[in-house]
Length: 197
Image (tube, rainbow, N blue to C red; front, side, top):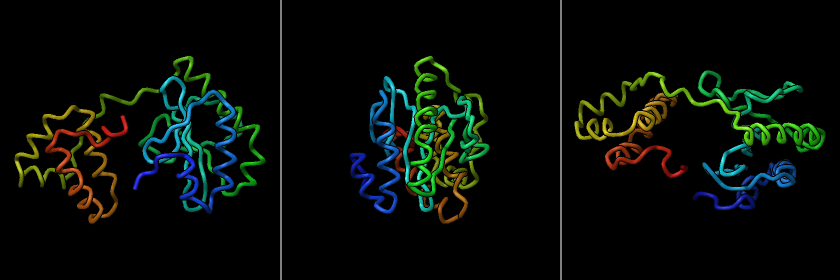
């Protein structure tokens, strides 16, 4: 079940609650607006995503949607998906103490990200990237021409989202499970990420 509020998100990650609360407090002290997108807290300026907040198994993180543009004087930002993401950068914290010790720096990074967004500085996604359809999806097209026809009716960006979704799965079982999930969506002309837009 999808979370509807940031409070609910934090309660669902009780083992990381202290760190999440500290980070949320810093973000709430700015002009950023709080929302839930993609199942987690996202902070925006004039509807534009600036910072996200997330809890993982061994750390919490804030990520900057245009983090590659930040000066990163403390050299703390990482690209969580090297080779896939151009702009997104993540700052990870293993303990709430690490968050506490970094609050002044976090504020500075967040403020720089806000100013960049307000100034219109952003790295645009590569719209000219070649569409590579995974073998598993091609196989479905051969078996079910109606799915192929529906896929071809989608915009290039939606086609790319589906292709990358299948290709990014490491295990065959995961690829098959993802295919089963997306085939009805393709047939209905729905994009993979439409509900988040």
